[in-house]
Length: 81
Image 1 (cartoon, one colour):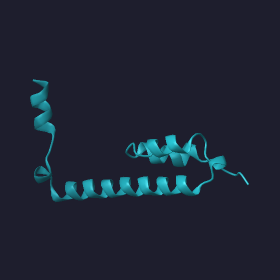
Image 2 (cartoon, one colour):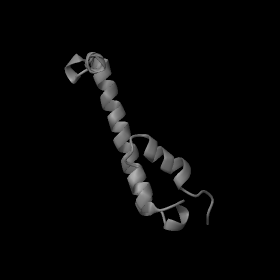
Image 3 (tube, one colour):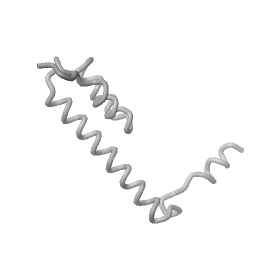
């Protein structure tokens, strides 16, 4: 019965209102922009200014909004000259 309930609550693209569709597109574009910004920053930032391994931060940045935001908040060292 749980599977039936999930199918009822899950909307397809055609079931969404125009406003919901715009919201999905805007959120998707925001997620892609964050991913690209994080990947670019990881590439350009010297290893000494990144906490941890660049490869791991690259992989983590692919985790929806959480990964890129975590990199920008916790992955970069601040104030190093």
